[in-house]
Amino acid sequence: QVELVESGGGLVQTGGSRRLSCSASGITFSRYIVGWYRQAPGKERELVARIVSNGGTRYDDSVKGRFTIARDNAKKIAYLQMDNLQPEDTAVYYCYASLSFMSPKNWGQGTQVTVSS
Image 1 (spheres, one colour):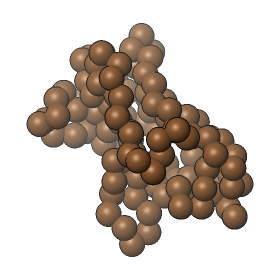
Image 2 (image 1 turned 90 degrees about the vertical axis):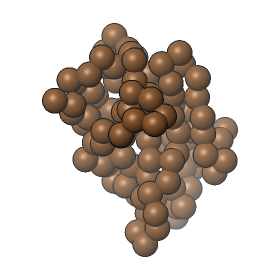
Image 3 (image 1 turned 45 degrees about the vertical axis):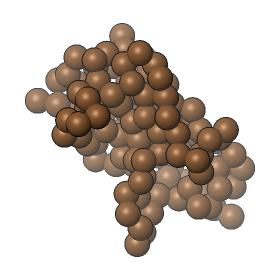
């Protein structure tokens, strides 16, 4: 059974940093695409960043240069380092893992990030 557990959310001031972690179990982590979506109140869930098994990354334009996604396959953990946070980054952040781009996504429970102005 796949389980993804996020941690690291919380309240941060504008311009601050936060690191989210996503700990996985029940999967061969190194084979999976892992990433982060976020959902702000009243908005659709949107892709923030993802990292594939060979380390290739993709970022939404709104976070390029500020967020960095990484993975530790030995620990089965994915990270999202968020720097220069802005109020518009306030959202619930969800970790996901999928075996391929066409495969169903497995989701974590989400972690709230609130950026105060």
